[in-house]
Length: 227
Figure 1 (cartoon, rainbow, N blue to C red):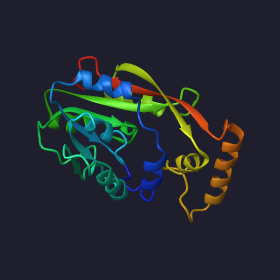
Figure 2 (cartoon, rainbow, N blue to C red):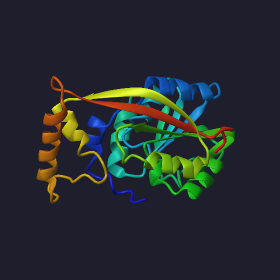
Figure 3 (cartoon, one colour):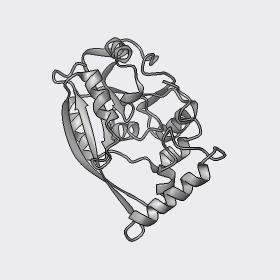
């Protein structure tokens, strides 16, 4: 992948991208052995990483983009059980056989499945496994990349879904609409039009000053746990 796609977006990403359902974290932790070491690959600004380290898990957070990784380091500063690595999905820079559970939150579609699988098998311990997580909006017909990417990686994954409603103020809605890789940045052609459309969308869809997205945190694992 182009690791520069999210350059300049770390602040709005940290501000406005949704977190994940607490029940999904419970479920993932229930699959892991006692005292498991986790690795969160493509960790971004730490939205998912922080949920794991709050549970006391030892975590390696891997992120290739410099801007996102700087925000990731800020997010994880309070936690002595977390360590940040500069690496990609295909070359994590993690030691061999060092991890019990690899997590990928909102990022698997950016990875080359076969090369990532090889890297997973290198860094996982013998009983280790991979978990992919997506926040999906069932009303969004264009969010099929989660199924495409998980089918390509796992083949026939076990799927669990957890409700994760998210509420946006106007400020956070605009930040959310600027946080995706394809969204324009300040100074880009079409930036002002994009902001105007985000405001118009908020005006059309808010209720008492909030937009609600009925997201679902979806967790994918392989049937036998190993990827």
